[in-house]
Image 1 (cartoon, rainbow, N blue to C red):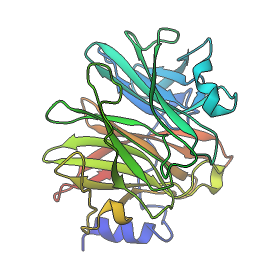
Image 2 (image 1 turned 90 degrees about the horizontal axis):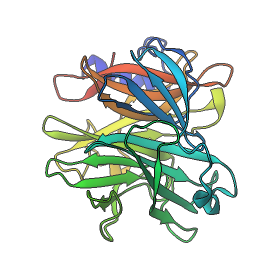
Image 3 (image 1 turned 30 degrees about the vertical axis):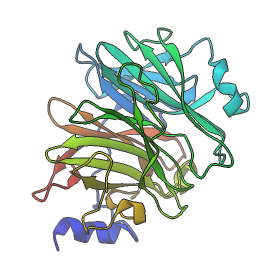
Image 4 (image 1 turned 120 degrees about the vertical axis):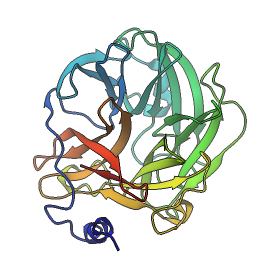
Amino acid sequence: MTLLTVAVAVVATAAPATAYPAPGRVTGAIGVHDPSAVKRPDGSYLIAHTGNNITLKTSSDRVAFREAGAVFPGGAPWTTTYTGGSRNLWAPDISYHNGQYHLYYSASTFGSNRSAIFLATSPSGNSGTWTNQGLVVESRTQDNFNAIDPDLVVDDQGRWWLSFGSFWSGIKMISLNPATGKRADGTLLSIAGRGGGAIEAPNIVKRGAYYYLYVSFDRCCQGAQSTYRVMVGRSTSVTGPYVDRNGRQMTAGGGTEILAGQGSVHGPGHQDVLADNDSDVLVYHYYADNNASLLGINLLAMDSAGWPYLH
């Protein structure tokens, strides 16, 4: 057993202060929830996160962040069927492909699976430049899945896939048409689950021979009482099966912990892996002692067995 697996085993019960690195230094507008980050062609950074009409922040150096307005400053009335009239839109996934920014985002109400994921595109990513491209996938109360927390991955063959999900029967995946960014067919795959338990916020990236599926276990959105933690599994196929370090399938509750709460860092999760020049970076939110939801950023590396860890 390696030192890393020893640390993970300990963290699963009561994390010591040294189990994981503290969030890296960030300044300015760092109040975020469910962040997703992209590096722009000019080298700057753009973060989209949960907020009224989807909130944007920018940085030139990955340290100092400033407010950058809303994706839809005029509102998003097409979402209110799912939000009960609220302007609060959740868990965006931002990426850059073929000269366009793509933003998948969720519309729902807390605890409900009457939910929808929409797509918007923009040539610049700036507030007010986004065009609504419409509904991608929805879930209804009679469904056994929940259409929130989208994440786009493009596989080695250039195929587009959208993973999503929260609670219910777990994390799902659909195929997309790369020309439109919309749903391609009736594919609905299951790639992770905890038997109806707390799992959400999928994020898939390819590194080396493997696709890595990052998810958040346990409870979000309870301030300093949140128990969110970041788990990972891997597969040689984008559609799975994903297994953890011990070989347990993620569809059977598997997952290797790489980040959890400790000290004054509570409930870290809703992670997004950003490929940067110096390193892969894990972007996430966590709660402070005063219940504020803040931006967390750490460098991400692979150990000798090809499993990620933060530093």
